[in-house]
Image (cartoon, rainbow, N blue to C red):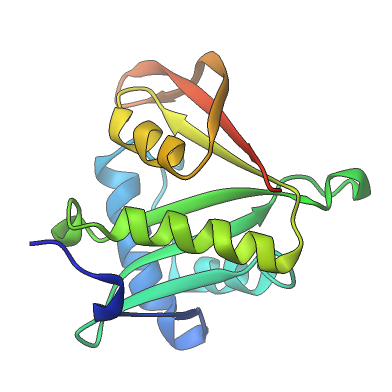
Length: 169
């Protein structure tokens, strides 16, 4: 059953959200290739990470029936000043809520928020085999700009990463 945007509260993440963010991310580390992190993250680590997401690079959480079910972020692409208008998008959904429209809602949210923040360019890096994520990003205006061959090693094999970009107009 799909979750509707009206069923969610999407809000800026705060320290009390860190345990839920950490749980979702650690599940992705252990069981998927959405991240190339291979070591479990602690609450302290994710608290530091959240504190680094300030200004034009925030983190949001999605709350459904009082449960944190997903999070998304805009991450600084580079610390070089010329890249200040560029951010990388990330979306992570609790494994029990995947396939229920949360990815659509959160990618749309990220694009809208990036516009409001005055960002110029969004990037997404999507590991091979995740065609659903590629189609999702294309739906919201991202285009494929290249494939980085065998750049990450996880679960015993080297994996390609598709680089997608959206220039905000």
